Image 1 (cartoon, one colour):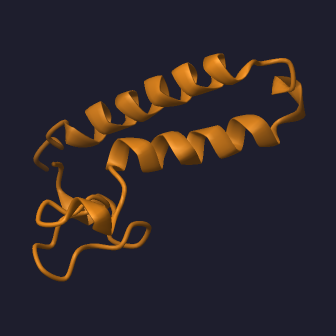
Image 2 (tube, one colour; image 1 turned 180 degrees about the vertical axis):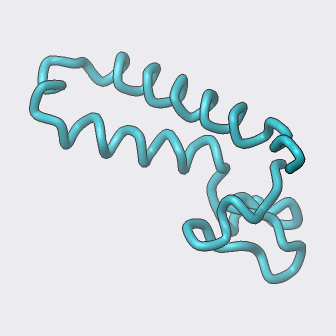
Length: 81
């Protein structure tokens, strides 16, 4: 899992292990970062009236693609200054 500092204010952490979104000590305590990001992207897509012709499968595919891209970018090491 990536550096938790990117998610402190938006996703709660587990009090037992400090994991972000999905607890590694108890999978019932949260959702994965990927699912959370896809859900946020889905909300944006369905709120946009120009996307009203997209079918559910395409929305799911596109939002998970966006979530994967966001995770990949967040996991990249930031250049040292």
